[in-house]
Image (cartoon, rainbow, N blue to C red; front, side, top):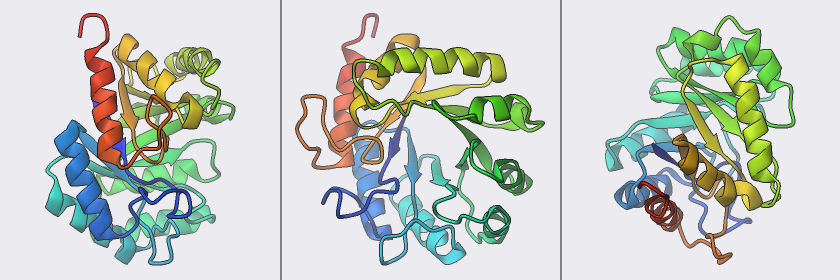
Length: 242
């Protein structure tokens, strides 16, 4: 399964390819799905470009994207969008339009509370377990671990040479903390493409998009999420046995 992560916390200052408005997110999603993406992950943003969990902001993004594509759509619950854990959970409880799933970074304060609020509303939880954090250890102790939709094994090592080894170490830790749970493996920036290729070799779900990298495999700037997805699907076709 290939998920496209359309924007992340990036802004137009990072690249003109970053979709910001609901309309831009919808068009980016449409193109990415046409290129081969099977799920969509978005960061709803205010008009000034800040990630937001506000009900109106989330609803506008979800309604626009769902009008453009017929695949599962997820959103972030990152602490940078709402630092107070109680407030984050309250925001989830007040969403008038529900995503299919939402990511919860388990190293962030209040992760359990936010995940519980999502589950209470029937929203799937993607448990973000980042390398270089205590997220895996916290998740292993969580009573909610068996109820998450999947684990997002997020490799924060941005060195192309070392990211695959970091990814393998993270996967070993995840296997001990969440046995039997589906895993989506991905990297970021310089580690994005090496980790995506590793996910393909291991037969794991993965993702690509402007959130994870601004560059194509050959180092050229990506003009769109669809261009990144097309490169990812081409990479998958080139794997042995594919």
